[in-house]
Every structure is written in structure tokens, then in C-alpha cells.
Amino acid sequence: MKYKVAVVGATGIVGSTLESILKKHPYVNLVARTSRDEPGYFSLNIDNKKEVDSFLSLKPEIVFITIDDDEVVKKYVEKFRKISPKMKIIDLSTAYRTNEDFVYGLPELPFRRSEIQKARLISNPGCYPTQIILNVAPLLIEFPREIDIITAVSTSSHTGAGKMAESELRPKYEDNIFSYSTTQHKHLPEIKNEFKKLAGKDVRIAFAPSAVWCRSGILTTLHIHTKNKISNEQLQDLYLSLYGDEKFIRVRDEELSVKAVRGTNYVDIYPWWNDYAGVIVVRSAIDNLMKGAAGQAVQNMNLMLGLDETIALLNQQNLSLFFN
Ligand SMILES: NC(=O)c1ccc[n+]([C@@H]2O[C@H](COP(=O)([O-])OP(=O)(O)OC[C@H]3O[C@@H](n4cnc5c(N)ncnc54)[C@H](OP(=O)(O)O)[C@@H]3O)[C@@H](O)[C@H]2O)c1
Image (cartoon, rainbow, N blue to C red; front, side, top):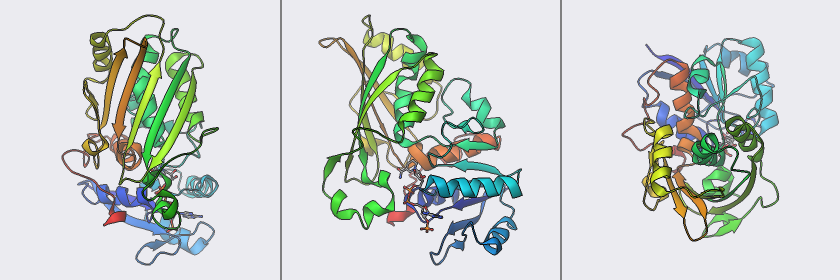
């Protein structure tokens, strides 16, 4: 049996990564990859009734939305929900990440997997939030009273900024590393929201992202102060107790690299007690286009369909078709 699946906004970097995974998925019939006007794609503009009717006549059961404009995304979601209420939607934008009608699709969090399995509407987490939340979840669950603030420093591939970083914005990104969003970042609301669910209280975050020219990947370093020392053995045990059975989380005790996770749905996490400074350091690496976007979206789809969540995500390099 194959499920009818569509990708709306498929010409982007994330849309093309999704296509690369879905084409290898044994239970997926990719009925449409849409674009506003790109040749070779299914033409879909939300204000064009004929195009919307034609799209819905394909009867997609699962629709991924990979449009990079929240207001436009809302128009699509509202129309789909009205005309086709049974359709399952996985939205990858920031539009619904703190909206209670949507399940925040981070399966490795406590109790989340069963919510995703029952959900019709999923908001797929952002790339930085996926990494940061998974990196601190064991600590927030175990030591909620001890932790008040987390500092996160991340360096992301330019692909985090979408296809413009390869075209119009290329001179800014190419052969460069630069800081951005120092004063505010669009991912902070979802991070704070999930921190609160994990710790049962507000936990502050100081976040400093940078961009680097590289095919894909994010390397993040967190510093977390606790009142008491935690040994490295305790840290390893703590992380393994939450993530030991997870297929996509690898708890490490060695240096990390984005190349080691590129094209995969893995999150590599390396927790360490810095005895000199008296602080927990958690370093991690993910592929922003995979576990940070398309890979996690397929993981969520698998769960929503009652399938093994690893289908089409293990033992293969799912690289974005955008670059091929
Ligand atoms: N890049 C990442 O690392 C990453 C990670 C996590 C989540 N995300 C999220 O994933 C989504 C896609 O990101 P991306 O990096 O793939 O962006 P992108 O490369 O810029 O692609 C954006 C897509 O949106 C479509 N689009 C833009 N404006 C539209 C409009 N007014 N109406 C309909 N379609 C429109 C474009 O299609 P046409 O121009 O062909 O119509 C294109 O396919 C965003 O919501 C982003 O926040 C991205």
C-alpha cells in the first residue's frame, strides 16, 4: 500500500531534500511537487481556485508545506483544513510552532511520539531548536530547579537561509563566517515553549548564531551551570537513559563534525563536565536539512502513518537534490 503525498513549495532547499527522501520511500506515492511558476512542477498558487481544485483532486493524504513565508503558509493551511479536513499536514515553517492545534514534532521528547502518532497537524521543529532542545532535555528533566539559563552558540550552513543564499545572497555567504540575529531570533519562542514543558518553569536562553559557507550542517555548543558538579560518567548515563534506545540520537564522548551527520537524520551529542570552569558543556552536530527539517518531517510522517519511524531514513545519504 502506498500513501498519496505532496510537497508544497518543492523548489526550495528543504523541499528538494524531502523529494530526495520521499522518492526512496517504499510506502509513498509522490503525487505532486508544487511551485508557483517553476517549469516541471505542479503549478499551485493558493489564490487560484482552478489550481487549488486541481491539486486537491489528486487527493493527497499527507501534505508537507515547505514555504518560507509564514503568512503565505497560513493561507495554505487554512484553505486545506477547510476544504479537506482529513488531510494530514506537516508544516516546516515557524507559523505554528507554538500553536496548540498543532503537535510540535520532536519525537524523542517525553510522551511526544504517541501525540505525533495521533496527530493530523504537525509543526515540524526548526533546525536550531531541534538541536538545542534535544541537547538540554535530559538536564531539564533531571535538574529542573538547578537550571535557570542556557547559553547556546551555533554555526550553521548557509543553506539554513534557503535557496537565496546560493543565488542573490551568494556574495554575502560565500567563503564567509558571519554573525546574525544577535538581538532576536525567530526560533526563540519555540525553544522557550519546549523548555517550559520540560522543566515546568521558565528557563532563559542566550542564543548566538553564525552562518558559514558549507553544504549543510549545524555545530552547536551549550553551556549550562548547575549548582553541583556532575561527573562525566553521570552525564553519559543521564543522556543514555533518555536517548539510549533512540535510533537517531548518538550520544558521543569525542569531538564532533557535521560531515559525520551529513545527509543523515542523526543528532550527535557530546556532553561533558568542564571541571575548571565548573560548567556542563554540551556539543552537538546535525544536518539542518535532515534532522533539522526534511528528515525529521519524514520521521513524523512515518509515525503518523503507523510505520516504523526509520523507513527511508537509515543507511542512505539523503542529500538535497537542489545541488545536483
Ligand atoms: N533551510 C533550512 O535549513 C530549514 C530548516 C528547518 C526549517 N526550514 C523551513 O523550511 C521552509 C523552506 O525553507 P527553504 O530553506 O527550503 O527555503 P527556500 O529554499 O527559500 O524555498 C522556499 C520555497 O517556498 C516557495 N515559496 C516562496 N514564497 C512563496 C509564496 N508566496 N507562495 C508559494 N510558495 C512560495 C518557493 O517556491 P517557488 O518560488 O518555486 O514558488 C520555494 O520552493 C521554511 O519555512 C523554513 O523556515 C528550513
